[in-house]
Amino acid sequence: MAKLIDILQQERDRGTEAQWGVIHLYKTGMFYSAYEWSAWLISVITYNDKVRMATKDRSPLSVIRINMANSDETFCRVGFPLKSIEKYIPERIGFNSEDDKHITVTIALPQPKDGTAVTYERLLKAVDEWKKAQPIKEPKDKKDGNPQEDTDRQPAQGAAKAKPAKSTIGIQGGQGGLIMQIMSYQLSARTPMENYEFIQRLQQQIASIL
Image (cartoon, rainbow, N blue to C red; front, side, top):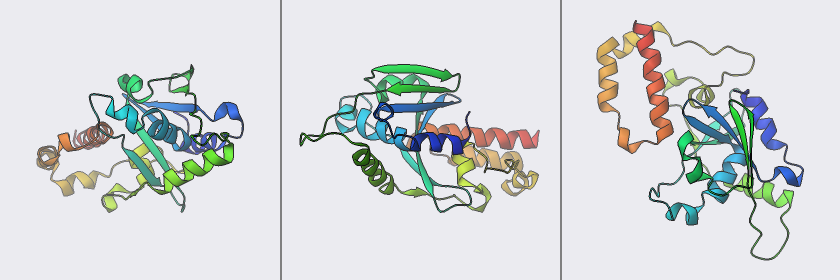
């Protein structure tokens, strides 16, 4: 998968009209992730309230806003299962596979109800206002470390991603600790992306025990 810094830069490069309606999707396991402008296009345009209420599963799409590592900046991300692309992006006018981990979906932007033209400045303002309205996800505890790594599997730039410390398993009680985590985890109350990340963390802990 592309580096996070490159993905975010790509989302900022929206100066031409041909780029306004392009959604960049990145495959991570069994999920697609979209960031910043692309995340806004999905959350506000393709999976808006009208579209959502017309589906059988009317749950809103979870938006995660995350602090950048070693920076005051934040970025937003949404994720959904690969098989659900028709649900979250039901109408599209273009589809391209950039590589095995990156696809682009082009959609038609709706025209403003007041009859004025769509402009870059207007869209940028809408994306910024939407982003600021999203709550920032905080690390669950000090062991979580870098929230950018925890939610996007992307290490901080210039530094290798730290491996889970062996002592973490000891603190959590080895196999007993894993069982308690599984038994106390509220699967039905979490989003598919949160469930996926929880399973990944369990796999890391089990690998440290074996």
